[in-house]
Length: 275
Image 1: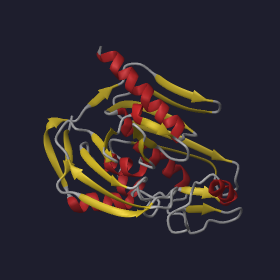
Image 2 (image 1 turned 90 degrees about the horizontal axis):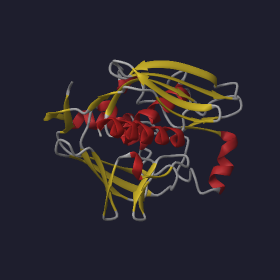
Image 3 (image 1 turned 180 degrees about the vertical axis):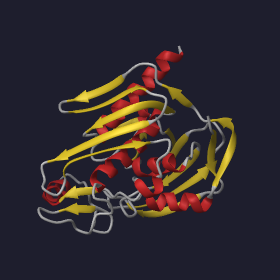
Image 4 (image 1 turned 45 degrees about the vertical axis):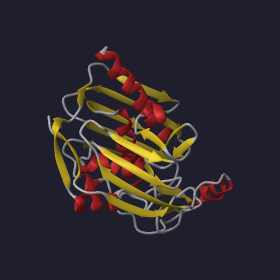
């Protein structure tokens, strides 16, 4: 079992939110061992745990007492992928900046700042029984396994995407190269409807991979970039469990709604076993 880590120094990033289109500034600060990931916004302290999810409409939003922080998943994914267990995240604005649509800018800044190992073991839980959440033709399953393995699949009725399947060893993955660069994506046919709902107001060809009927807005960074971004989101949403869980995960057509419901189910299963 490895020790917990925090950042050696604070990291600050700013930019527009992909949904609000508004400017925001985020400062990620070192935190004591055992703190976990905690957001600070509007005078509220919001732990990055599944019970604080207040919306999963095209992103994961955390909140408390009327204060919310939108689109936390890329930042949380970058923290998990870099190995940061404890951090205070101060948010000036309504939404975490989208940057280039991936987690890579965060990862690069975290690596520049460096990590500080702490004198407490990382919380890692061995799953003892299956846990699952299903909704229609979607589902996420976790089964006891000595390592953290993920099999994921997505399917879109689109000639450029279709069905994509891959598996990853989350304990051995090179997150920076294999997952972090995968950008958020959207289909051109969705844009008008999203804008009408007040979503994607900050979206652009610079921070999203747009999928047209017969071409991409820019060359994909991976042949299966759509799937890898879904994995990026899954890793970020699993931070809301509050512990690393050793299990074989199977995610079929995952979404933020499914991911966060699954994270809550895992938390409840873990808490049930400890009582």
